[in-house]
Image 1 (cartoon, helix red, strand yellow):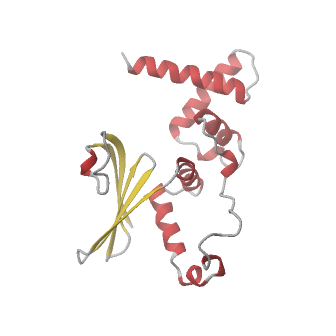
Image 2: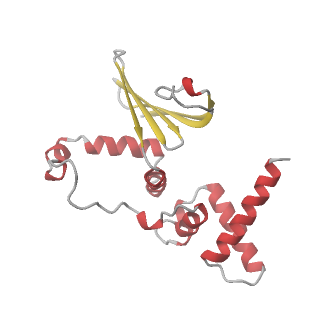
Image 3: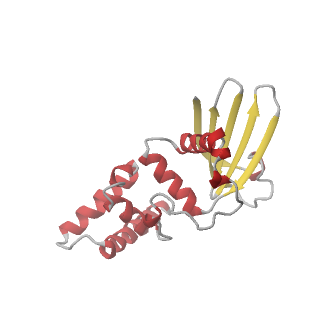
Length: 190
């Protein structure tokens, strides 16, 4: 598998399936060569994931899906936990879902499962970004899954709390997180 990854800002019409978007938004683009016959283009634009599948014979099919922020965040976390990129995780998940065994499984027979299944690391999710970071950093299963910038922020806040002689808990972490974010906003507006 060969992958090309880039991020940037594009006019809304430059990304397939986004003609109705009003403003220019940041996006992530990932191109994967799944096999000698199939190319997969992924565009991640906020909580929208556009997938374009192309066979080498130039038959194109485009699939646009919208996923909620929680699912997107959990997919990123699980991908990092497994040592994969998000694109690799999505690709392997799709490949597992379309295997003969999965398609013949009783679990795929109904449209809706009888009970909603629990997602991996779902308890770490929060609408609040600071809480999510605190939850991932303090969970022994996932603390090694922090990105470089998350590790730096965690270290900065942890040391600031310790220097004040306070105990690091969710409340003190959120307070310092908000201070750091406020300073970043001030610096960005200069």
